[in-house]
Image (cartoon, rainbow, N blue to C red; front, side, top):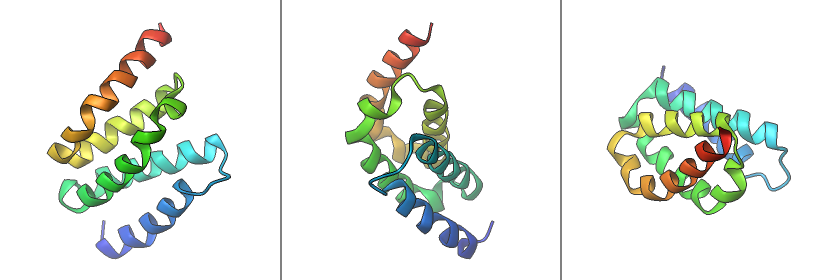
Length: 105
């Protein structure tokens, strides 16, 4: 996957993610796409964008997860693509993911 293709796709996805009047399915598909791109290019290329994604998402976490396992899977892919760069976000995310898992049973 080339850097030019990555940039051409990632920049519009960030714009969609940050759009104020988006629908939940569009948000979920956008985050899923970002997470797949991150997996495709690997942690060296994705780490900086992954930090931007997580910095954007963490303040909105309570309203986002809402027992949504699809979103949790996207977070897992982002974490995998970021590698150790994801570690600072882990404590905040784990608390919320624990609640999602607890309520899904």
